[in-house]
Image (cartoon, rainbow over all chains, first blue to last red; front, side, top):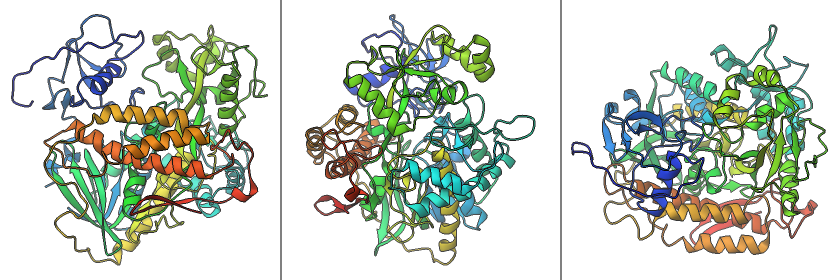
Length: 101
Length: 538
């Protein structure tokens, strides 16, 4: 949550070679926690560029980062303001509702 | 928020509509549930755009129209098809002037011959970059026009209809959870199609049929809802990331390629050429699979092993490296492909002014039904987005110019109400179940039993989806899923009902129990929402 100290939640997901971090996050939303907030739109094509997060300390697209069998640390982008969970404010300022009024 | 013209959705159709309306003197608000110009189908289009430019070979829009009507299997609305074909060259040239970068040789814009076209007619942007380039150029144009306000992250939950006239829309700001009313003299639905209803799809998560659900609840008529196009050679295996699953289309129009069954035999009589139109190819692949001649993952092999590394590189440059990053070497291996939900021929019924059956409500792009009949020709989707978007913008602006700003009752009449738990179900899981059933029973191979089974599932969800509460807080993912499920469920019911009623096979609609095309069925089915649910009209 914005303003509060970050915390990690541990989720175990089934591993299938070739799967992506985004696949895992979508699996968690369906099977464990439908309230988990993530941002994506094109699913797998790396066209919308909306799924950018921090994976093991590095900026990455969730849709093109392959899942590994080890633990992976997923965090919201550190340099953007946090909205919720893994979602940060990435919309161009002149396309946000707040600046509109 | 008040405006002359409200445009819902910012793919190519919505962006072109906004530009068209602003050029005609209107103030425009362009909203999208995702980021502006990033979340629709356009940005993912990695293929071609059809227009009778006559750059590669002499051409005329009438030839394009003839091919479009032929592919549509007798069900095109000829006036809409004509608009698409006739206005196409102008839009393509305008995009060219704006710097989209259509692929060229020294002398002219390149045009390739896609399946179903009688000559080279389809333009593209290298490498496999048509959609992103189109989106980028339209975004750049939007940004130059001060009369267009762009607002992303805004989900339209319902249209506002007063005394039978559309006066704007009710929306939720996804990030803050705030409810707001958008008051407009004219409204354009440009929300794209419904491919998200299917488990295997080539589109973004925004393509859950929002516009069809909005139109239905506002009292508008839909048409041809049973005709969902499956793109025959969607990527199946090995797992590929960072590429749109329809990427093999450009490979085939540049390099040919062989579509093979498990016996490594060509089954489409193509002889290495890319000539089969989509409905034929889709059904041929599924016939092979049903006959036990499918690939390990249940599709067909697509092979480019006849191409040298140099040929591949010259045609696709950096894409070859991206494939290598996925462990794919086309000189050594065939890949598996299978039909994937790709486009919707049906949609909101509109005339050539893009006016729907509800006054002051327009539609544009894939959201409109009819131009492509029972089977869409390769390359017509982006063309449809440009031409219908531009037309809708112009006509909506003209109507707005002679309309006073309608008074809008402050309390949203049909908007979500505040408070309460979102739902007793896990909507994300329900969406996945719905997609599974649609793929199995309401996809390219249909039977009465399957359609009835999935219809039962769909109607069983109606209670959970009857009312949409308001989000509990800012960014409420369960609320958004419930919103999506509600729209997807309603639109799924339209498709399944229409598919069950149409007891014949035609184009994208293939009934295993009615395999022949019937002359008596060369007609459209309309769909409306009555007080007791979805109602078909033919």
